[in-house]
Image (spheres, rainbow, N blue to C red):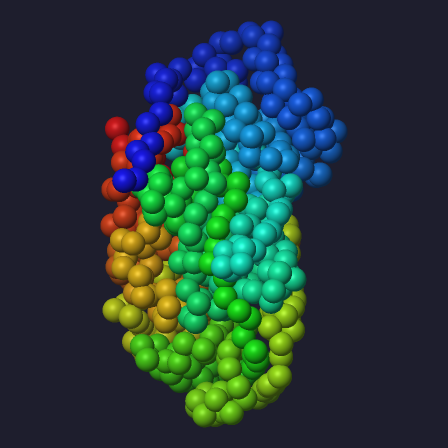
Length: 516
């Protein structure tokens, strides 16, 4: 019988942040004393190792330790900690909670909104209670980079520390018997955040998502307890962290069922270059028709990238050259101006090429605005909608020269699971449509409008029919972002949150909130 998580409930005092360390009316000495108390507690949690605790008052804190991914959203955590084991994570969480600080983990640091309470610029006011202690500002951040072990059992179960980046996971599994698992294609994304929102990538059509092959996880809860969650123990928690993990605890390690690497990988790319929106749209419609067939060979995986005057279709086929040729894939796309085909990639050759291509798209830090929509088999766009989107993308004022759309193809194995099997809700998914626009300074209303209009047009002006991916956070979502991220699974998530984190210690502006 699965364990039920019961936590001691302290009074919910967020309204009393008027008497907290950052609130008006509190003396400077009181604020300083509180900060000193927390500092001492954090240092004690890591046995006095000053390399593991960096404070906002330290020289170089912002540039060396905060390093926001999206420069639109500056944030000021109280401290960033670098624990080396789960027991230290637990002590840090306890310190922060006792001092009424919110806590968040950081892996690769690729959060689109830096998990910060930076809502005034967008909404004209803060939506969060308190005065800056929520989410990013004033919070205690637990950077898990030192939790980077990978061990593979004789049964192929990999125990993976949450601090590993995706490239680390790939290389370490390869070194441990040429094993592999499904995950994304950005080399510096951390497995900790990636695997707790879904963990999709080029291999997902064939192998599923990271959460589909997760068999267990070690989790630090809001009260400092360390538990091992699985289908048999703490099963509600295990259900929740597979899609909404950041709201429920700090995962310190995962167990994943791995597979043997494919023997051969075919990498392909087809480029259509044209100044005509109609020509680009015609090529995409052909691609769209082929790839949205439910019985499409699961060994075929693909990404389409739309940019100014260009459609790039690339991907991989996890099989032989002759089997790929039998699909007759590339010849069905009109207007191709350049094509490449590499028939004899090893798994690691394919992965290294993929990691490089994604690294070229996404710098570690930039000003950008991004918005996505999850397209299911029941919400596929019509040809006229596709035409309208290409007309907008190629002719509307964008406010930037650097924008692109990613269409990440799914279907296949991820849709084998029921929509409620885990908190991740996307189980009739055809693909994600995501538009990114980057600029050299803070993104403007012109950029925002360009992105918003493209996505809304793709949704046929019916956004209520579409969900979004929790890994693509967007502070401009209208209504309830939680409903957009988790759909029908939100109600159960709120109940579990009330049981394991009633005071919302693991808080973000758009995270799951405890049911009242």
